[in-house]
Length: 444
Image (cartoon, rainbow, N blue to C red):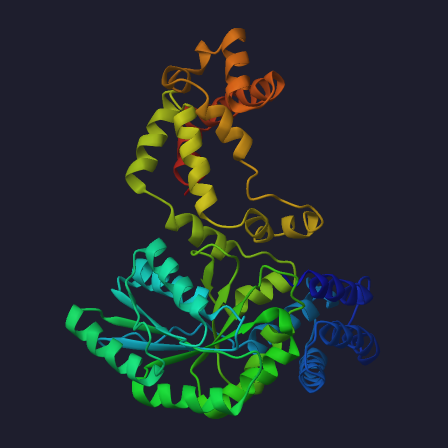
């Protein structure tokens, strides 16, 4: 995500490296490269020019402190302006009504149906809502079936009317059904086309009128760049939607849609999709995205994801076990499960300042823990609880059972022993104990 843009911006700022002061000449040279980087990322030319003009104006008005290098000052200004370009601040969806109705719109293939499922799961787990999903795409049978499958996976009911080809009637009946069944949230998945056409626009305008939604979210495939922005404008002219959802940000996106869409339609980006899994959805924070574009990581989001998996009672128990040197393979695999729930491993790595860039060319498999889990699951309960029991013959049996080699089993046991010793040291003395208390566990 944004890797090419991040690299090009970094190269732009190197033009100021070693400069003792900001001048019109060196700023102009740097911003020329910044503008080129934005254009390569498929940002609208007028937006790119306006952006660099604003940055130049602010940079030339700065008195650079002796302790701050000109390059650092310009990075700070670009960061703030990038955040402003993407909306400046996070904006939430309106779900105060009972039932709150959310209409999800967009072109076919943009990820509307998957997002509807993700949103239902997110608002149920994070906001305590009782959602009802509505299958309003009557033209694509696969869309109805897909929504049913998603509903089963997240345990959220899906309202359908088999054979009814009138979405307006379906929506009205669905909202009535939601009120009767005590659902305080209705999420309507609407029909899309491969391109904007008058029939689709007329239909979705009629659905909007029938549903009277509290929130209209326009879903757009971020990999389509300026096409996404142009489509958003066409939809906004007819629907006057409330917010944008950018999907497929985990793919090879250049970033143009994220950077341009707010300026074109004057509507906030509210959510981003970062993968296929149903929990791969994030609230959009412009400042955090600016951090990531400039290679500064996103520690706040990383910590928030960890805290979602954090169980305070279990953490206290684990801390006591570590202090008594009783941390075992069952605890170890439990921590691995918590890490996996946090999301795509490469995306998690990109949130750590400096790490994302170092690992950009590495292919981190989401099944990176698969071998470790197989080895641990091939141990008996006694072996997992007391690793010292694992002698040579047991190691061979574990290797055979897990489809790995004895060397891999030996390596895991050695790493586990070293990890346990380090954890024990950190809880050993007073200083260590205090330090460990303030630190998260693997899944915290």
